[in-house]
Amino acid sequence: MKNAFPFLLTLVLVGLTSGARSDHHGEKGKSIFDGKTLEGWKAPDMSYWSVVDGAITAIASEENPCKKNQFLVWQGGEIGDFVLTLKFRVDGGPKANSGVQVRSQVLEDGHAVGYQVDISQPDAPWLGAIYDEHGRKMLASRGEKTVVQANGELAKSSLEESGKAAIESYQAGEWNSYEIRGKGNQISVKLNGHRTSVVIDEQEEERELSGILALQLHSGPPMTVQFKEIHLKQLKPE
View 1 (cartoon, rainbow, N blue to C red):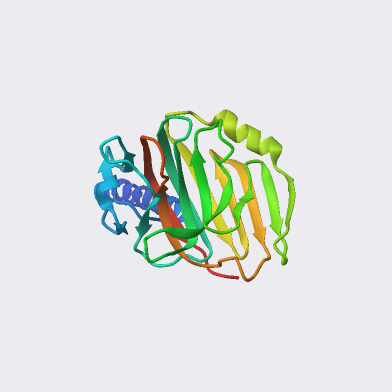
View 2: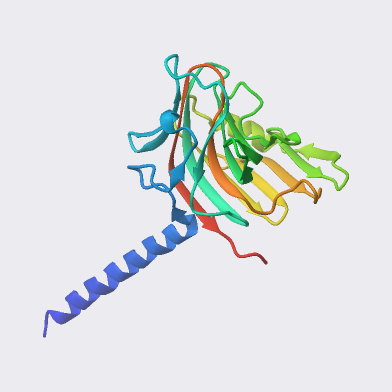
């Protein structure tokens, strides 16, 4: 019996460590990409999409050019209030472009429409911005907070300081992170931990409070866009 206490103490410590890990995972939400396959994801044309080095990879090439926007849709259902975190990497020229669709809808031709958090090279104005794909277009550029008023007018204020810090933290050609949060009629974005854009959407006939999640490969020149460590936490409405 004299060895029982050290054994019990070990079990307690292991339990505490496991609990801490579990809580941390809970904070991030559920992993929705297994790092190996595209199970649970689907696009009308899967020829652009694969898994390379543990990342969802979209490639537009000379042999397989991307002539219209492509969307890989998560098959887990619609999202309402949520926190989405992921890492992304872009390889291509100055026009390389991608995005993350949230609370969106899919048309019959496979095109996703609705809120998009843009991905581009840092010299372009799109990185960190919130766009309305196939709709009202740019809602909040990088460094902006926008209130979309009931009549559709955009009332803008500045997030210039945090937007500048985000770009300074960005590593071209390397992995960078997004945190995208939707709560009620508000969408907000952080790039590498720095807030880049906020939209408060009061235009009821145009806004979406729920919809699909998708990854975009934009039409244009040859490029490679990758995504990994994708976690989704669905929040309970207040």
